[in-house]
Image 1 (cartoon, rainbow, N blue to C red):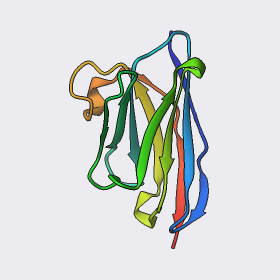
Image 2 (image 1 turned 90 degrees about the vertical axis):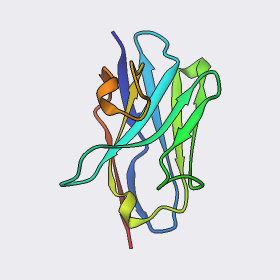
Image 3 (image 1 turned 180 degrees about the vertical axis):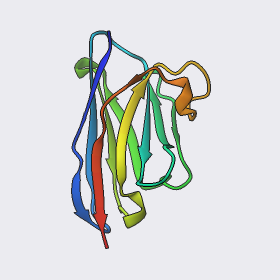
Image 4 (image 1 turned 135 degrees about the vertical axis):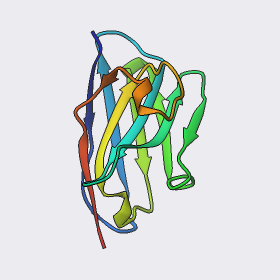
Length: 120
């Protein structure tokens, strides 16, 4: 069974950077999505990465966030630069979508999330 663990969240000032990690155990995976959920809001798509090199980003983070992976470590990273207060949320990674990569309902395996707080 796949287990996913996110890490790297924290408190940062606006304009700062954080790098989130999503480490998988249990088996290798080839497609990972990042999502986030702010208080009172629905979970939303952030980024997607596959080992073939395919990446997608939400318009709200394009140009600021970069997703990458280390296959040897079975870990995917989300580098977040130029952070804004509206990026404050719990960030989740998920694997193996069966359907549209940006649809959280397509994913069966989720981590528990890591909190990112951006102060103004």
